[in-house]
Image (cartoon, rainbow, N blue to C red; front, side, top):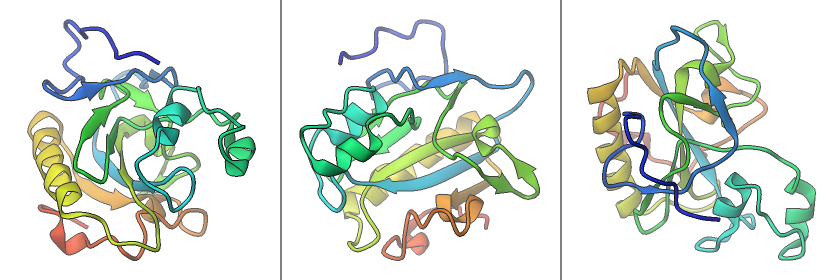
Length: 183
């Protein structure tokens, strides 16, 4: 696993953000603008924080011998544009100009395939624990930057676009602490 090289002319990489390129992305459909930010929560192993599991998952380097749960998910090919660690560190895995594989089967305002027109933001967290102050600060700064660059119409949870299938960012996520929520 290596840091992504200089992105050159690709404005989809945010300046000053740690970059770790994920192979789990592809081209957005032609002419499809970014209109949605999707908030997720992830912890690997489940309910544990700080380890390399999330980065390894997004870069297809997950070691199935490190934890029994990793054997179940080792073949997944997923990513997100961003990860906000518990300490507020921001990592970017996919250029915002590309489609990250974060939403899966999803629908927003009658439109399916939310990956086509969204940016995925993973917060290191789970349904059972509150998120950290540093995460809300980083998330709000990131959303401000994204709104400045793209016509973001809404910020939603994964559970909003995949109800019944997903619960994240979960009941411990405080939506009142996120600036500029439109739904």
